[in-house]
Image 1: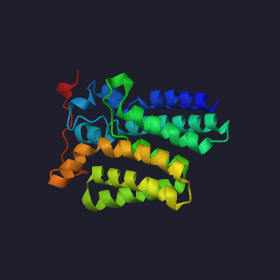
Image 2 (image 1 turned 180 degrees about the horizontal axis):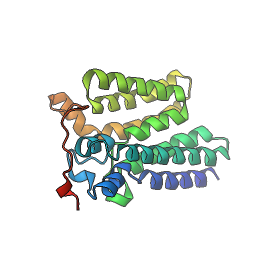
Image 3 (image 1 turned 120 degrees about the vertical axis):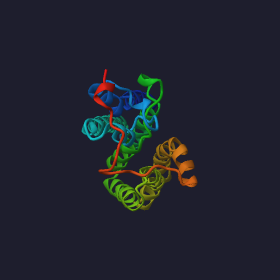
Image 4 (image 1 turned 45 degrees about the vertical axis):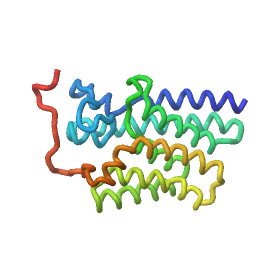
Length: 214
């Protein structure tokens, strides 16, 4: 019974995770593929840098909604066998897998940071708050979104253990964090070389011109 519930959770969460807010928003508003611009990543930061504010709310809404639905479903299904927390964590892992490697978009998706934050909040709001604080402090002082995302991902399992959860549950969250960190491998290399691009708020961004919209 538990194996069947895990399989259903994996399928539902992966399918939901494969729905990409940045790709949908760019195609709906600009009729463009966000992966053809900037870093080529189908994520919020690359979307904002290349398309600006229009559509950002759509990106965030889609990615948060798909995350919430996936985790709720996972918790509900595994809750049938008294393993709701395991269900939420496993759903989170499959969700992030789908976001990073979406079947709908040639397995080229985003980096999973926003989904990871939602997973943290929905497993324990205290872990989510700690991750957001880590992310914001690093981004505010360094303006490196990638560094904030990586550090929040790395520390999420640590916070989980600090708040008294078991080794097995922490390992599930660590697998999700590992996916996010590995997806940021190129960013980590650029950070070490000092060539990583900083976040520019209110500065110049490459916005798609009207004559580029088809």
